[in-house]
Length: 282
Ligand code: C2E
Ligand code: MG
Ligand code: MG
Ligand code: MG
Figure 1 (cartoon, rainbow, N blue to C red):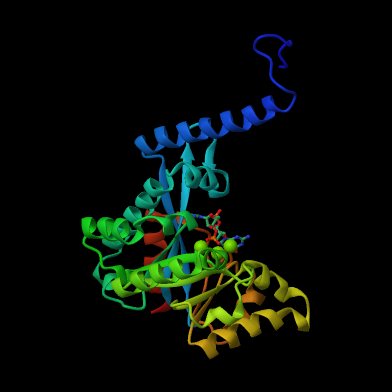
Figure 2: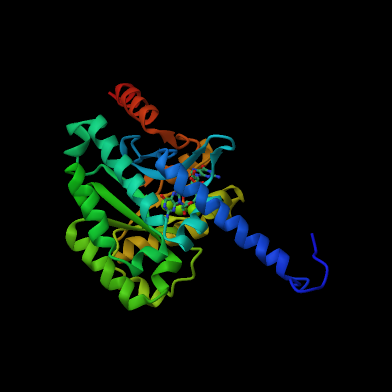
């Protein structure tokens, strides 16, 4: 597609860069039109405690594209973050969480052990995050105590003081806060105690490694000890096998989630899952 040198010439590298920009703009336009057509929604992945009780779920955004099918967040969250569209997507996820509470009913709204977790992007900490979350919750009459905010470990190290202030504000409103993908973000251990959070969420990669013989659980055990000493609860993500679940059940963790328990489910399937699950336990 190179143009002949002339009035309109550009260098060898520019077309590639232009293509990347065009592609981003294209995705951006598609996100905007898909938001209007209500093609984004949250899926919910159940979280269980060691007794098998449901203690909540993580909301994970999905793009149900008319031609391309279900698109993973990895493909559009970065574009949404750079373009500012993340705020609208966030609103959709929180809205779906509020609607899910409605369909689950008072039993789960009044159960103070039960929360829905939503993922927060780093760029949202540079905005009025507090106000936008509270605005949506007010719209649906839900208390911040029902919502857990997942922020990644690396986010805590960007603009640390400001981020800590923001988290303190959010905690004052009643939100729960969890450090997602813990162990992969190289947060300085010397700061960990000063992070005003409730929970460490052990990254999937460490749960994976539990298969590698005796030493495999060393990191998981160390994170659990660390959390215990600092007064945080622990959630394990990415539990894919019975063996991993058994090993985790013998440890001091509050909850776990993963494909072995359930894949992320659309809201109505989640409600069905919850209802059939509780009848099984009772
Ligand atoms: P995350 O917050 O660490 O979410 C966990 C991811 O692991 C999800 O991928 C989930 O589907 C997947 N997962 C759950 N159980 C298992 C398992 O047993 N095995 C394996 N291999 N994977 C499992 P998903 O839904 O594709 O989301 C990817 C990432 O995109 C999330 O990672 C999160 O960082 C981001 N994301 C998702 N939804 C949102 C959102 O609404 N807002 C923002 N800002 N980011 C989001
Ligand atoms: Mg998460
Ligand atoms: Mg995670
Ligand atoms: Mg992860």
